[in-house]
Image 1 (cartoon, rainbow, N blue to C red):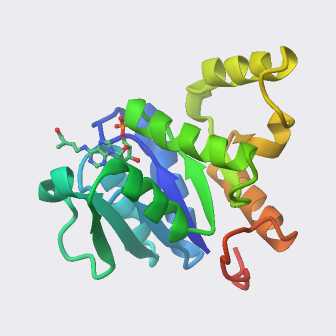
Image 2: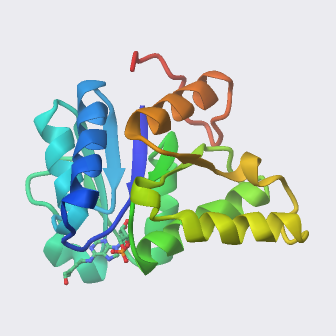
Length: 192
Ligand SMILES: C/C(=C\CNc1ncnc2c1ncn2[C@@H]1O[C@H](COP(=O)(O)O)[C@@H](O)[C@H]1O)CO
């Protein structure tokens, strides 16, 4: 599968790097492709290193003003003109999206996809890996939106919150096998 990962560009401590490394290893060992923002910094680098080390493939989508921190030596690397184009390319190249811990960049990418899913513009699965309860606050906010009628579709249809990388990958696999892909993404044949 081609899994797009939105995640922090910051240097983080073991509480966050260890689960991210574990998820990267799952992707690599499963022979999956990591589609990511292409940068060789922070948690983005931790995950790219881990996927490559475990035998997976990298597909980067950098953006002009961050091209100087793009990971060198990645055969499948493109550079988008702006952040909007980059988000569209990241989604186009992936079968599903998993969100790891991150800041406003990650939040921007995630909410963009939530909105596309809410309007039925993509059916590509979205999973949030809620490491150390990092996204508990976001989850509460979304639940309040749902309870008070701000969402037009059930929250469970928009996003799945997973506690572990394995749970995140299993969810994506189940969704894709059940026909949850959209936008002409390929059929899932790989074992995970
Ligand atoms: C130049 C430095 C860091 C480079 N910053 C980024 N590199 C690549 N991609 C980025 C960067 N900042 C945001 N993004 C995208 O958003 C997500 C990470 O943002 P966050 O705010 O850190 O969560 C990530 O998925 C990228 O696609 C060092 O100064």
